Image (tube, rainbow, N blue to C red):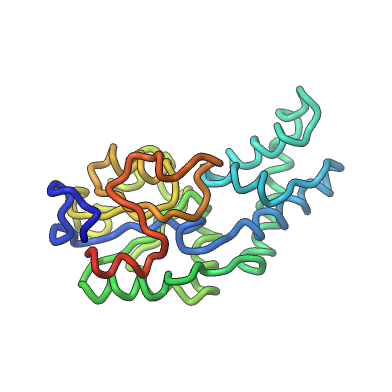
Length: 229
């Protein structure tokens, strides 16, 4: 049975744009490791995985602001921010991929999309310098025609600009492109860009129930997408 409405019929898709963190790879362990190294240098308390899970998804800058608001003394966030971001990026480059795992069904799902002739792009709010090595380390880079990080365009998801630009790079139109993600960021960007959107039921949705998000459908694993496309 198709999850898609008539306006987003599967036979209309020429391409798919796939989110990274929380959609293809569980990267919370990497985030926690890098953040806690940063916090050690700043003399601040550690954060744990449940707290970080609710903070990720809107780019490194937003993550650092959120963490500092969570652990730093009120009124000190602004003074700490720039050093915190610099040290976080330094440490993340070192731990990238060490504490992360590919979700079950991801390679199979990507292969099914490619087998149907879809062009694929990875679009993430993670910096490009982190996204590309992570995909390579996990053996997923070969599935994608293009990879764009959060620094690739002037604005990040949930703004529609990254999706529109990614469609242009793939040579497809938003109406013929499926967005696959794990959060309201992905869904809001897709809706504004004119893409259909499928969300996975796991991942990081800022601590909110994923099935409350406006989407065309939900899957529990990317390998469920094959019969739908």
